Image (tube, each protein chain N blue to C red):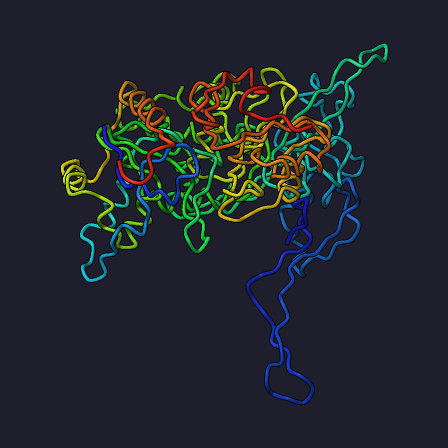
Length: 423
Length: 134
């Protein structure tokens, strides 16, 4: 039995002891057969220990790593794979192989010197140990770096992404929750049926692969379940890459070519790839100009396609969401949502108060007191919204019906014309 | 290319060529043949234009986002499958059903040229003065 750091606290066997209540011959409850039990100081030195009669301790201990008990006695030396640690001094015995990347840390440090929050990954680098709460939540395990004179030289980060787990794959297995590096995060998402569904929504499959994509309805359900009322930026970014990876692997499988380059995660994560092929969706992509992320609320075809077509604009936050016919509210995943609720959703999806809003939602700008006007009052910023039905066409232009005609506006002129400005 | 299955109750925009739902008959007696395959066909056409607008039925239940699909020959709205499954069978003409069958209930891929043609047709087929019918 382990705690959040993977520290082995107790080992039990499959035996159990029946305990009768006083005077009765019937078994009242069972006690477990505890084989070993131990507790640790922060850096892993043993504070208390109980050993079985044969005095043979359990092989694994602090951080779930193997003890080298033969060297210095029980629990006093541990093998982390790359290096050996002595938990009594809280240091490794040799220089960190990654020490060049962490000049602020002593080369002998253990788990970034934060043994409660981190575990040490194979003696190489720290990794967060406390579970995340939100899909795509990121956490970094490094600090600012300084040169020899003490000047700030930048921040060296190792970023981890939390995956909440529970996504079904084609064999019915569920993905494992945990902290993943960027590439690992893409890999774990790409096994899911949800990624498959996203890929087919985005039209990433060739026709031969399409027929092999299995039960589309089930996949779609998985996608809806995963996306829910929206993903955060990091989750969406990795998820799109995962969809692309999944589609690539299927497509090449069908054509008979399996090339490892199709799985090159670094390529997929490159901004170029994310910007191409309609992969800008949901969390959108803000990387090129550090523009505000666009966020699609929902996961249906229309949201995905419109979000994918939209070209984000510097200084504006794009909320892509279905409107209602009365122009007073929104529809997110078949539920009617008020402007205040939408605003809360936006805050949860990367909206920074004070940022101007492009409200991509039919009819939201149709009435002086309609949804856009209300959102403008709530947020206290400029809001641009369409007066009628809005479709974002495939080169990023807006098609809005207005007056007697459909008006197709070039993206850069969105402040004028048929997208109304509320301020 | 021809428009099919458009119901004027859902025309909030400029595009007004449909008939009111009340003018269509509900076929109560006969079970619809190949219903599942037809619905599948209707949901998997190539998207001509998709709107950030949800369609609600008379009871104010959400149906689908408003999307127009095409298979290169016909253009139909996303809510067509919903009403067809509610036995509004005369929304779909016999020729369209035959086309679906000939396509093995799998909408054919539409090339960019055809798609552009469909989009142009959609944009140019509004008429605020014509109400109900063609």
